[in-house]
Image (tube, rainbow, N blue to C red):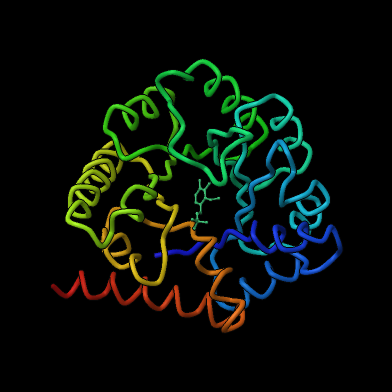
Length: 245
Ligand code: PXP
């Protein structure tokens, strides 16, 4: 099972002072050396954390896989085509949100997604769509020829220690099983932490998790290398435990 590390919040800290440290490029290198299988950044419309300069440098420095999260706008398509990340993950984006608040509504925005995905694919960029754990949304992705989806674990993450957790896990499992059945590659992420990651990591359909805030938050205490290693160990332990059971 793979771990993609989202380093947006290294840039958030830098932008708090609009200075030049900490540098997301250093963070990417440390995360990769610690075992990250990919680096994710979200270039937001308002550039609140990651800047265009970061994307350009990370494209040159990232040795694993660079995943660019982006809104479905032609401005972002143009930037993606210029820098050619390995993957683009299409996400909904609003100026008011503190973080991505839900999956992209693939049914409502199917025309736009088709246009954006077509442009990216033509340039050899793999396209992923961030979707809520809902079979209709996964089916809509399938209809558009999307081969890679990232299932939103945000709702589970909010409820992981309540009686609603199992309900959310069931939704994620069903969406993952359906996606796998139609030959999609299944990723998951959002809100995952050291305390709630194991139930998601245990799902054999899921190939990769994208985790940002918890790793970066804990890196302030234990260092980024340890924060990545510990998350990956937990994920792998959950997966092995599930395989033995
Ligand atoms: N996946 C997507 C599509 C996201 O937008 C984010 C947050 O940027 C993440 C995963 C990572 O979420 P978190 O920072 O809560 O780990």
